[in-house]
Image (cartoon, rainbow, N blue to C red; front, side, top):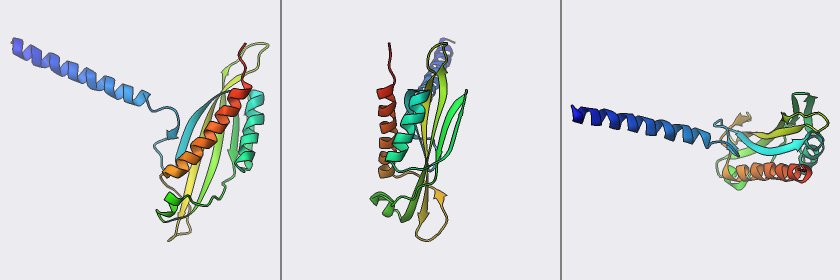
Length: 171
């Protein structure tokens, strides 16, 4: 009887441990990286005022030579979407037989705080979609982002984060 109870307790402890391991693993997936979808990259780039989100986002998009296709601003969101931009493949993409690449950038800010007599502060997400064209086809398809392309997108999101940090003041 005592032995059966010990086995049951061990199973419960093992089950609880696996649950904690699973939850901790899921919680650790935020930050920069892919979304689990081929050709997608996301990064939380921090906080920005509405003014900085409008001004500094355009500045960084211009730096990387992305043209804004769509801009929307409402009380609930500030949204930028770029045109697809043809980019020459990085070496690791060429090694995979990729002939052409084209990323598109989406930057979305959602209000974090709204206080009377203060600027709204937005939580900002950087999203990139990347399509590739293989030598054998003329079709654009989403594919896993190569390490060199990921580095490029990470630098882009880091530049945005730096710009936003330089504008946000705490008093």
